[in-house]
Amino acid sequence: MRAIPHLRTGEGMAALTAVVVGAAAMATIGLSPAADRPVVGAALGGAAVAVLGILVAVAFARRTRSRHHSQQLARNTAEAWFTAPTVADFPEDALRPLLPTTDPPSMNRLYTAWIFATHGHDAVWLERHFDLTGDLARQLVEEAHRRRPRS
Image 1: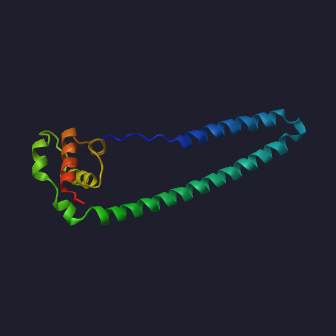
Image 2: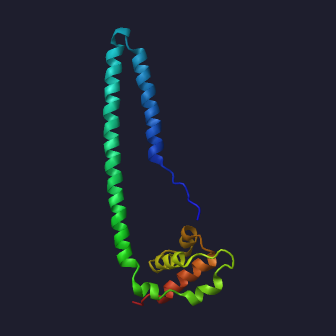
Image 3: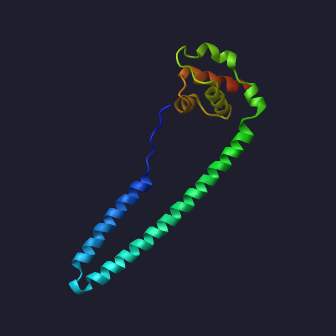
């Protein structure tokens, strides 16, 4: 499966802001009277260090919070989704004729795709995230719909 790079708009905006602020600081120092340049430079340098410290603290807190959330999601998903009855309903006989003869997906990948299909993910999503053929992904979704309890 090929990894798709994620766009990081926030990082791009931070870099652009740093360039603009740096240019404005250089212009401010350049336009200051010669006698005031050391004071202006020190004030701008101190402000830059303070802002950098705040940004690092916020990024660290955000990363820690994100990591905790991911771990909690993984625990909840494993407990709620990967149950014996769900895996027992795996449609191996329906999928066998659709498996490619060369380099078929592993059973772990198929079981995981099956779990996601039973939780409402569509064939296009399964195909993209599990590197499955369209026929396999559609069959998983169709079988998942057949096995849903009728209300």
